[in-house]
Length: 67
Image (cartoon, rainbow, N blue to C red; front, side, top):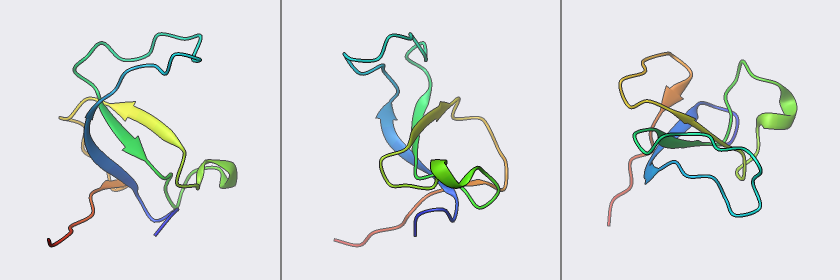
């Protein structure tokens, strides 16, 4: 599934303790995994980004899971 679309996560985006930058203001949501039109090195499960929840593009999606 990696590299298909960036996957929206429920988590609010916050910088990791080792992250020197301060990205996100508390309203951004995490995106994981990279997409088909990005650079090859961004298409990995651990890749993380952030966008406002109102952002709509064909490179963002979500995964459905059944319990």
